[in-house]
Structure formats: C-alpha cells, structure tokens
Length: 408
Image 1: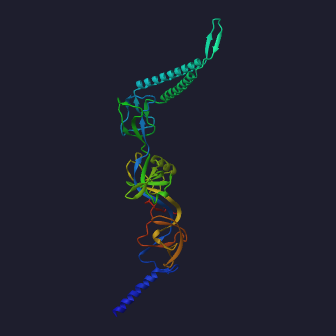
Image 2: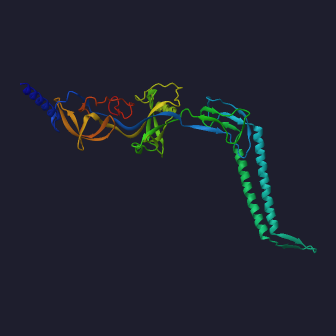
Image 3: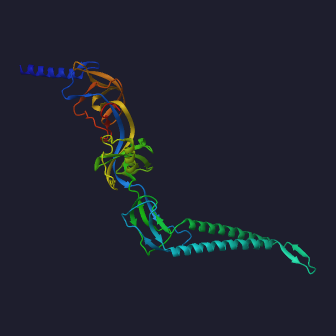
C-alpha cells in the first residue's frame, strides 16, 4: 500500500508539471509564483553606463607674452589671488611698463636699422653694376665693370637685407598688438597664481590659471565589447551621485584611439562634456513659462542661484546607444524564446493565460520593445522575481520611462 501511495503522488506531480508546460495557444492558469503586468507605452533607452568624476573642461594658462625679447622682464603687480572670481576683461596682472616701453623702442630701432641696411645693399649693387667716368673734356662716359663673383655676393646681401627687414617689421607689429597686461578672457575663477610682483619672468611664463566654473567633463572606461557602439557627438547623460535627482545632458567629445589594458581587461577612455548648468537652467525657464516644473528625475525643481557643480564629484555616465519613444514595453521576464520566435503569456477575460507570438525590437537589461503581437492595456504573465516595477523619467540607466498622465 505504501508503494502504491508513493506511485500515485509521483503521478500526480508529473501531471501538474505537464499541464504547467502547456503548448502554444493552450489556455492555462498562471503559475502561483508569477505576477500579471499591464502592457504600457513608454520610452526605452539602451545605454552604456560607467562611473567617473567631474573635471573642469575649460582651463586656460594665462602667460606673459613678450615678443621680440630674449631676456627677463619684471612683474609689476598681480591683482588676484587663488580662488578669486573674475569677469571677462578684468585686469589680472601687469608687467613693468617702463621696461615694456624700452622693449618697443629697441624693436623700433631694429626696424630702422633693417631699413638702412636694405637701402645700402641696393646702392652697393647698383654701384657695382654700373660705373661712370668723366673725361678731361667734360664728357661723361658710362662703362660697365662687371665682376661676376662680386655681383653674386652683393645680390645675396640684398636678399638677406630684405629678409631681415621683414623679420624686424613682423616683430615690431606683433609687439604693438601685445600688451604688458593680462586680462581675463572669460568669466571664471583663479585656480593658480604662479608669480608675484617684483619677479623676473621670461616670455611664455604662466602668471595665473583661469577656469570656467560652468564647464565640466567626465572620463569613463568603456569595454572592448561596447566601444564600437560609441560615436563622437553621441548623446549621454550624467547623474550626480550626491544629488540623484540631478541628471544633466552631455555629449561624447573624445574616444581614445588606444586601449587601457589592466590584468588582461581591455578598456577605452571616453570623454563626455556636460551642457553648462547655467545655460540649461535658462533653457528650462524659457521652455516652461508660468512656473511649470520640469519632468521628474531631470533637473531639481528648485536650485539656488549660487548652486555650483564641483570638480571631483562622483558621477554616473550613461552613453545612449539606442532610444525609442512611445512604444509598447514589457518586462524581459515576460518573454520566452523557442527557436527564433518570442512568446508571452497573455491573460484572457476568463483568467487563463494563452501563449502568443510577438515581434520584438530593442531591449535593455529590464524591458523589451514589442513591435507586433500585443496591444496597450493587455496583461502578460511575468515570472515572480523577474518583473521590474516601472520607473519615472530619470530613473536608473537603462530605464523604462512611462510618462505620467498618459502616453507622451
């Protein structure tokens, strides 16, 4: 009797297993470990995600440009300190103007001397080519007294004099365009001050370093499996880890042509540049008149006027590879594959599930686009543990975005 009971229990379990498998087009009850999800429209993004740190992307070394002078010149005054905010055109540093004026005088004298040397070379060549002889009778006789070697030398001296004049003129013109003062080429803040008043500096000496506090970039490592999907100028987003609600648009500005190999793992550096925060805030204000708020998960509704991103902040960069909007989406856990055909279990009015073939588009780690075979509002069965809750716009990378209040 015990053997018979065990046999009956095994047969019963096998029957349940066979029924739960079903066949295409067969009605069945959804398994108790599954859940039902409604097919909705939304936006699907496939992206490559990696972490990095913010870095200032617009930094400029401001130098003392002293054309035509090989020696040192004295710094008269440095008018800023490290950390100071400055405006475009603001005076930052200047050289000793008396020494600067002496330099201009020397360059002008060099130009005059070059002009004299050219004139003398022209006269010497003319004299060597033609000589005049005055006879006792008063008649003037013109005679040629050519020495080929001497003529060649004088012609070369003339060419050299012309070249020296051109160089002297260029040096003088450049000096007139330069200034003993350094001014800020753009609004920003001082990151370094390398000299002080009284220092002797050479041409090209960096006096101060200026950075734009509104221009940032981030470098990330992209694997060899993903690098071919990254394109110059491609769209990206940058999420500030310390402010998860702040997601800023960015653009791919550099893809390293060489690999970074560590422990046999091949990666490539990719740089993205953020859209300036100030410009972005202005665009949002103009696009949403009357006090409307931006969509959830993009820029915080309220940011103080003195809010400023900072160098070194940890960020999550998502480079967008593919993106579709207003499409039917189902969780990946709802899809099964037989050969090359994808299927989902669709709930019918009587509470049973029926397997249906579908045509799919792009997908990410969480959701798949359905091109054909399903309609909005239908319900599909998702195996418990694989169903993902819908997230609002601005959710984690590779997210499904379902707009509030209906389809976009």
